[in-house]
Amino acid sequence: MAAVLPDSVRVLVRGWLNSNSIVLRAPGDNVLVDSGYCTHREHTLELLASRDGLDRQPLERLINTHCHSDHMGGNAAVASQYGCRITIPAGEVKHVEPWTPQSVWMAQFDQRADPFHFDDTIAAGQSFDGGGFEWQAHAAPGHDMDALMFFEPANRILISGDALWRKGMGFVWPEEGANPWIEAALETLATIEALAPSLVIPGHGQPFHEVGDAIAEARSRLRAFATDPAKNARHVVKVMFVFALLERGAMPVAEVPAYLERVPCYRSMAERFLARDPADLAGWLLEDLARSGAVRIENAVARPAAVA
Ligand SMILES: [Zn+2]
Image 1 (cartoon, protein in one colour):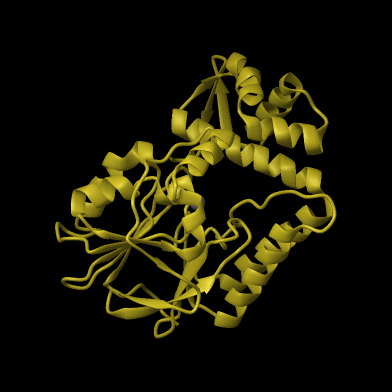
Image 2 (tube, rainbow, N blue to C red):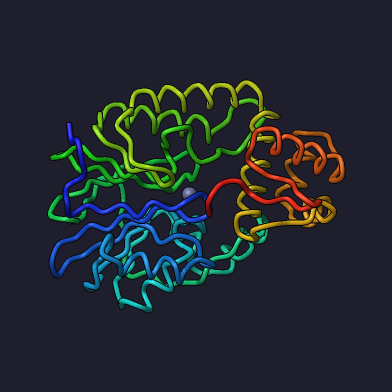
């Protein structure tokens, strides 16, 4: 079991707005996995250049686990700084070329990403060299049906993206009855179990060894969501709203109902699964997030407790 990461594998641990970035160092062939959220691009570039990252060396290639805004939002900034080649999962091409559907999709969630150009794609079954090791791409559908995860068999390290975190995973869409996202996410967990990584580098949070516990926890959450789509929808609403607060830093409580009404994903979750109007939704949401400690409310302003 890999007690520590090989020196050529560097994890820039971020928070919940920015995905982690993983620097795979090999002279003349440095690789970065995922680039964070666009509004934090300057900080991402600083971290990347630092001794914990590239240590001022060039970057040859950037590869994404999936094309959500918190993982590819910094692609354009990184490519313009380093002139690196960008590789995205083959299934994500339809989401980013042309950029118009991506803009439409992000408007649903009030998210942003700088448009970028990719140079090539990677698909499940293919591999790439990074940090002196070969990383195999495996399909990781569920949270994003076109996502990949990358497994390095010599040290048994898995870069899981949002397919598995230490506590949970990226949200999956709610659905009444059979839920293809949850089915896919459960299959992805079975793939991870079969790969038997000794260390997981998640898209968010610290790298961890407790892979069995993490899989068990993710499974139990997914099963609860499968039997109770409204619970899943409440989870999606909370995750999306905390993300919005992380981007903004704060939001006056009085503005929350109008915000939830304006951004389509909340309206759709509320109408389809929660039978609440926006004002009602705002009251419940803030109370729930404050009670769980995810949000602090002071002087009628809501702020996120987590780091961005
Ligand atoms: Zn993410």
